[in-house]
Length: 215
Image (tube, rainbow, N blue to C red; front, side, top):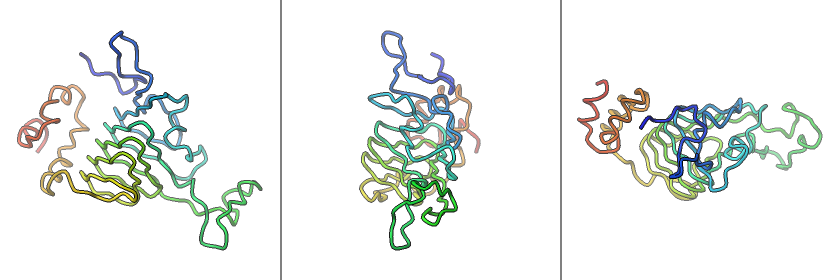
């Protein structure tokens, strides 16, 4: 069976041949100017939204200075929300009330917080149901983020994160294996090679994976 193009909006087919509306390749389902998504990264929702960008990142506006960057082959479960920097209020003074929203004061208004950082997610990241990804999150490759976790800050490659606040419970592999996996970067291989090597990529045989990809 041919793997669907990353430009396919609904890549999962049901038993009757119809497309599953609750699963989308995000690169095909979003055209938000402040969101960049790599090939084959998908999101799921039990109740499919009309606006996937607004569903996932409700505070990221067309005019927001920050971006949401998601790598390739990421898996985003139902209920995940990216709380991007435009959700912030200024809180270094006497009040956090955003007066500029109601006066139209714009970015230069005194109650406007400074521009915040981009939110970045690496490749092959699994984000569990109901997780919240906060504005300063810099998420590495190969992470597993547990259901309901609240993730903030820089998270290293191939970590498993859970809880509120989210913390690294353990790493999936040792540092030498992680370095090798990042160097192999299987997510950059052509899709025919990836699908042909499904057992190797999904398995734990590093030598077999190295035999397929570049050293």
